[in-house]
Image 1 (tube, rainbow, N blue to C red):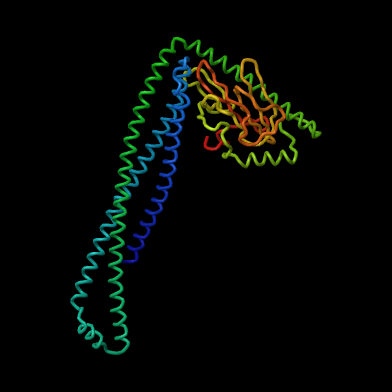
Image 2 (cartoon, rainbow, N blue to C red; image 1 turned 30 degrees about the vertical axis):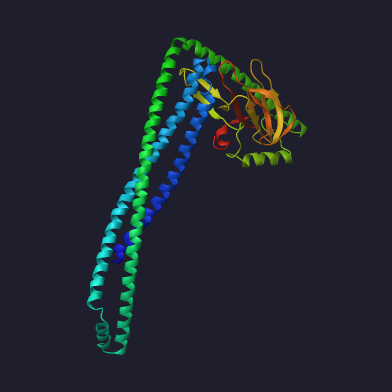
Length: 405
């Protein structure tokens, strides 16, 4: 085999190995996403669709269905990505198997030729004749070395054939497993697509029944949004007041950022260091409304603004602090349920829509300490909390702070 050909073979084997490792890592990531999304759908069914008898509001049902549709859509995308990745991996393995088979055939052919030559000169007499016919001692020594190398090469060829055969068997086994997994994923994806189709049809029927009430619905949503904005405005005012009071005590002015004590700096630093790893404010729950400005899922002409995320959970669920801190304020606003603001240095976490309170202003709290219970709306059957994070007066997206939100 020429050096150039050997180099090319080693190069493509290296490329194949690297591609295989990258593909395997991506496959693991997609599988983890798929499992997470399937578990999220289970949670949605348990938290939003288990008590249909208490659901009296059609709008609520449409909104809940939209949450599930979004997750099913994402699940289908992830599963499709897995299927495409497996297809590429199967094709790569099939090409590798074909290449390895050719190499195995070449090894076997080479080995057979060696055996034939060895058989033709296997007698001790022939070997001795080969040695004794040497013209001098150096030539005899070289011929002895040749016979040793020839024997070693033949042994290596036999080992290489065995290893190549094992590799082919393993590749074939992997290929069968990958094809089986692909068949399973395709079948599962078809089932999820059918479920999505049925749920979307159900949602469309519900939306059709709401069409004649759309103006009234838009009015209801607008009223609800107005109340939410008033609560947000009150929270902003309380944060600015707390900043001003804190800075005044430190002999500073301004109401845009806290003047921190060494203890408060440490808490803020630890809070920031745990970005993306903070615990959920509930032991279990599913996000039903994301952060920021967005189109209403039912009344498309209406836009809603969220300064945090809305998390649905089970009735009587305990609300817990996501980090150690001090209760800065307890907000009670006309027409709404209490909200708790907890300060962590120059960070503030907000917990809205509590049915019961376990803390008061000035209380020191620890991470995961229960601070209240989520309120359950008896008319809609919904048990939801609105959770937000502020850095001084700046509103942050909780998704980037809470673990796997």
